[in-house]
Image (cartoon, rainbow, N blue to C red; front, side):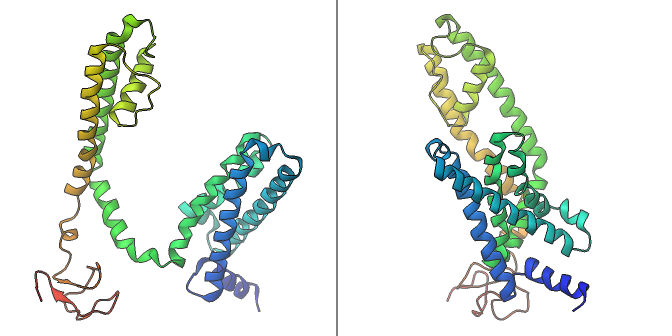
Length: 279
């Protein structure tokens, strides 16, 4: 077998989940990813990290898993025709991020905890689980976000203006308490406004005057009303065909991507019916 044939066969295993070997490789990779994230989480627990035996085991496991990810990354680069293009692609960057943290820990000890970024690689399981059938819906959503990007930008600028004004207002109201309620500066008051407007409400800063509590109540109510604004912006930008895509629908599944002359659903095989048809 020539070197090119070996490379093509290896590329089929690594990048093609439709084959038995490719599916086994992806499932094995998923197990390694889960193990790596678990190791990083356990190592962040002080009693495990400081334990003489458990700490050594976690460290050894982390380096072994990092070597496996490094080999996987190098093999992927060797299998593709344009390594630079793959390295700069989304999955190429994700693969690189799964390797860097452990090596980074040699310089910055806490950098190894970024190993949890490896969990991004589970996106590859979309091929294994056959979730790629939802790609059309994802593209429609992305298209709606792109179309509404200017309105979303205006909305975010409006929200930013609101939190600056409301934060400054609350600082003025609560200033006479000498910082006892937590409003010690305008930036901290803006932080409180963001937390309150987004309905998170940590409670570390809270107004102590009646007027401040009244304003805070209005901001909380306003926060709930702002939640629906981005949703309305995106929905209004959805392509019209997403509301009623095609003139046929499948009564057995939610699939709507049918040809005008189709008789059966391409997803489940059920007979199609015209939209609006009632049995």
